[in-house]
View 1 (cartoon, one colour):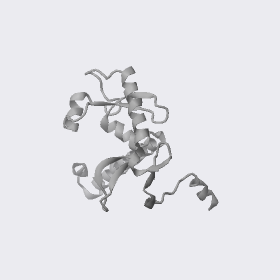
View 2 (cartoon, rainbow, N blue to C red):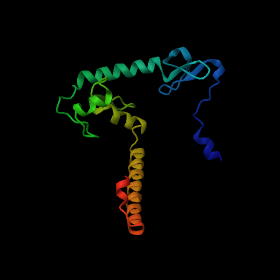
View 3 (cartoon, rainbow, N blue to C red):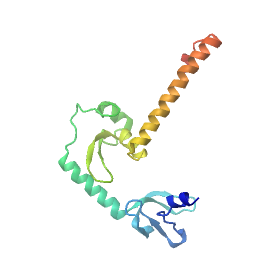
View 4 (tube, rainbow, N blue to C red):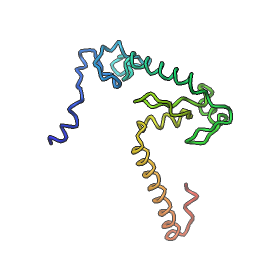
Length: 167
């Protein structure tokens, strides 16, 4: 039990009645006004705010702007290195609202990593840029594919029909 409690020793608890929040970047408790509102409201009609304070968000934007100065935007022949899509395939997915590629950078060091389509950049973000999450996701998909293939073979042998048409 003590080992489990050790895992949470650095977690700060917030008394929401104080009107404060903890920034996930600087880990400082700040008044709600120092967090950007998302333009939506919760069930109690309060503004929904980002988990990053305005100061840290501003720093991130400056960092990305500097990286864009030193790393030129890809040319029209560039493909996303993850999904291998070209700009003509990406733009319809965004309804033309964004550029085909976004700058990907290391959130801890600020180092430039490359240019990705927004979907792939978001996917890496959801995986917290953690290669172990990505490996587990890959294993999960491969195991599912194996189960499907085995299931299809079993069903074809025992039910006498080609079940691949159902997928």
